[in-house]
Image 1: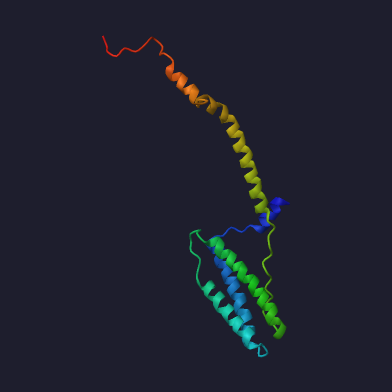
Image 2: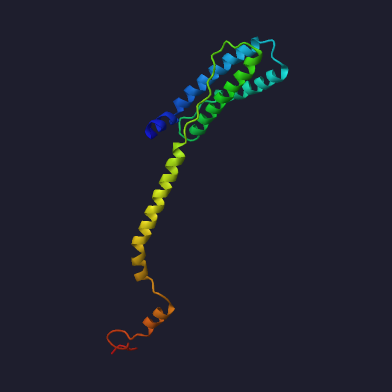
Length: 169
């Protein structure tokens, strides 16, 4: 179930994937715009809002995604947000006009398995870190003196082989 949910909700953002989704969004947008242009019963406020939305999404879709990965995920998210907004606009326009364009379905929300997976990884790392510290701690205690008294005691001890001579003979 978890693996199936991850496969259903995961899209790898390649430049051609984003370009295909943008082209599909632009086609749907132009179909709805044709319906809006043919509609005479649409009020001016809704028509002005639609015109602003149409010009914004058209400008977004006119920019082709780059071939490198930087920003492709955010661009794909924006395409999905515009698809959801287009679906909402279809519902608003459909109340005043008859729509002949296909109905745009909003992008379904994926279950948040990644959040659960992320916290699971954090838990495993915390346990592994505690285990590693527990294994290294006895070695560290042997290398670090217990306190100042022990360090000064080592300084007062005579060196093996007798006292040092200042001058060589």
